Image (cartoon, rainbow, N blue to C red):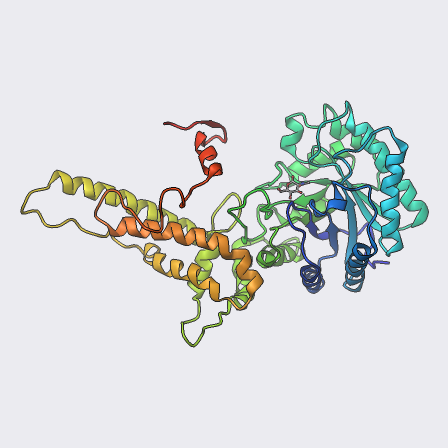
Length: 461
Ligand code: GDL
């Protein structure tokens, strides 16, 4: 048995993203962190474990079951509740009792391995029946009763089809969905919720209080702040933020579904654990927590060539991490860096124009470089930092960073060339048409341009 009460405030991690699930080694490292940092819940819900969703009716093979058993054991030893989640909604045949029996068959396998905490997820599924709230509540209640008959301390959590404010507003799940599950679901069943949006910049106390009324219970937060499965170009190493410590008193728990690449999650999870433990009366200083967590992460950026090349510098490290901060904001250093780059490009455009206007045979040659501000002067350092990530001793960390760092370096290189030249347009042998920024997806992206209000319209020709 896990030694975490099912009614304790839940804090921890959901492995709940699309893409390759974490390895057993990564999970072992995660459980070690969670134990050390006082996080008490892990949810097994990798969208692309075939048997979690697409093949949810099939039981696990002996090998697969042994891996789950190892995770369950590690959690038990670390005082972490292991929640096993199943997502049957892609093709569930509502009204067929054999389907509920198939869920129970799978859960039976987990009970036999020592599991006692479960979840049924109905997120991201096609709209297939008239009133899913009634049908899903009946299934969850039946499964919950079945579980409790076998294990008195068993718990069940439920992820609704509309799981954020925006989805409810746009009618996902049909009218009255939340009120129906609030009324119908057994009161012991926790309900997941991601906030005002799927990836919520803020989750306020007022927002969850209003929701709790509708659900007849406080929600269990599934927080996608650091999830990056929806955007292959980005990852998020910024701090847990946009939530006040008082939120903890208004919810059944806080669980975060972070970056798909496990090695990129140190700072997100470290700052989240600090947030969970901060005293109620304290102000949450996300930036200070971030810088403290970066200090702890910094040794992982040791390189193999300390004799040949100087070690990477802390300032470049902070600037690099600030370039991959949070979905809705860059870190302060990256923001300042961007503003200077932008200003330098504008200044150059103006200067070249003025030089052209004043062009006379005896005019002095145009100035090559704009005024270099403190951030712009770090462009070269950041480029070198990106290139030297290849020397990291921690190879999984490098592999997780490599494509994004490559892309950043290419953009910096092009900007550098442009600013160094006196011409209004520059060419570069490393940025050739058809290879650089090429491909079908970028062409599609150019068809519709995003506007400031979040809508899209045809790009100007
Ligand atoms: C989602 C998915 C989640 C995914 C995340 C970010 C929930 C409940 N479901 O909608 O699996 O990782 O968005 O893309 O959040």
